[in-house]
Length: 218
Image (cartoon, rainbow, N blue to C red; front, side, top):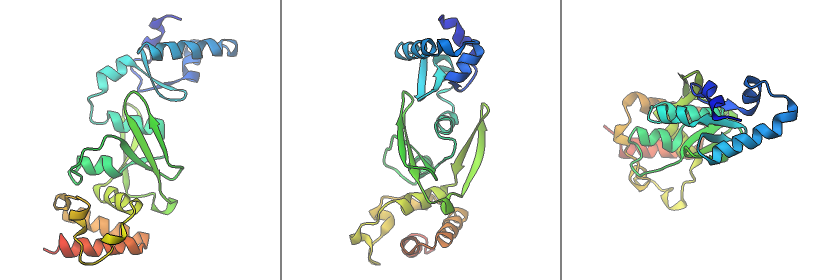
């Protein structure tokens, strides 16, 4: 198969094996040949494999990799039933100052990690009742979900074990956990408190009380 066949997909954020076969009007008898071609093109760098059965053309990647919404959209392509949260959102909001590389998201499904040529995508399970606190955006026809800063902070602390030595009232949790909470606006603080009230978590109530006493007292 010739590389010219990829031109039909260069304006699309991704394509599937089935979509590729349909555009080429390829029958099931040629399915193996199609898979071999896509595998060969991936090795040669003509296309990028996002995950099993999902691909992106090198042309689309080169044109859009610098877009703010590019990586969030890729995360949604890989696992649509998820929303960006945790480290990814907190780092962009300057709440976390340490460099972290994975793209992090929350899913009601199983925890998993997908690594491809674009990056590492970590999906963390949370119980369905806490699958909330995000908004939906669109990029090149791809709908992706993104948590508010308050919900990203809640998710980060809810899923992170709190060491026993930090479970005392004398600790300054924001400093101990290296969180720049001065960047959190009053409205986001209120949303954070609301998520904690909804969760009915003793650990999260303890964390909120600590933040209010040590950081947000004024």
